[in-house]
Length: 363
Ligand code: FES
Image (cartoon, rainbow, N blue to C red; front, side):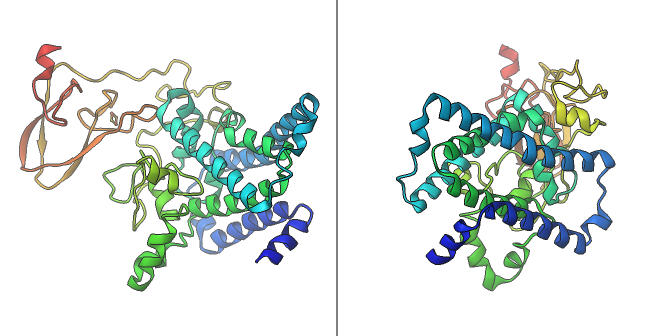
């Protein structure tokens, strides 16, 4: 193993060859499995994903790494030796774990803060998976991504080999977790294989774990669009309470509220706006406050699951329509205990959500 690793690291630009191999390999496998023939992606989707991938790998990443390197080596030339004395294994694990925890918090913040959400929104507009979905984000999202700056620092400090190997492993995990290939499917199907996947999914991000994050609604049992933020390792989701392990895949992907956006608005926001007034990328878009002082009477069906809107922005009150994205608020899932009319809170101040507890009378 040690010999193999040394031989690999000795090959010049091995990471470039391996990343290209991973991309071409997944591209071929997805095509053979019928993904290309059955894809419903629009021309704009393809342009956005391919352009974003090319610009990220040939423009944004090299520019950031070069900036950090040249600034660092001119301001503090001794810094280029900082990590040189470390042996490869601790350097590699230190680099990759810090990279992953940075990305966990950046990604999670992109779901919890409005401006970052708008830079990440196009990633969740995709209504089907596929490895190119990994590259759907606004240009600014990548330019501000702390990991890329961290890569620049490690390269400057003498850890380029650790970065190169980390990049290969990262691409393999991220691309496979976005892919339509679902390599983990047989592990959930056959009882004898289940114990293996239970261990694997507690270490790395699997397709079922990440597909769940892309699912449209928590009402779909395999979806949790408000959790599973990890990229390479599921450790951070487990540690910070956002992990939901699944055994199947969402029925529907993408955002609940559909809009017609040009790929230019998706990629160049906030420099380019959407023409669709319903879109969060439209210049004048504002979330409407749809909470009301009075409770709402709704007919529920015994045993059926519902998502109660807790944020007060849904267009389908008192139920969630996904408008909470970009806030820390999540909808509340509940199962109706009886069939008939029920008073659900719509001031969003109840202590007994989703039911009205008359808090609105004192507001
Ligand atoms: S729209 Fe989902 S919680 Fe309000």
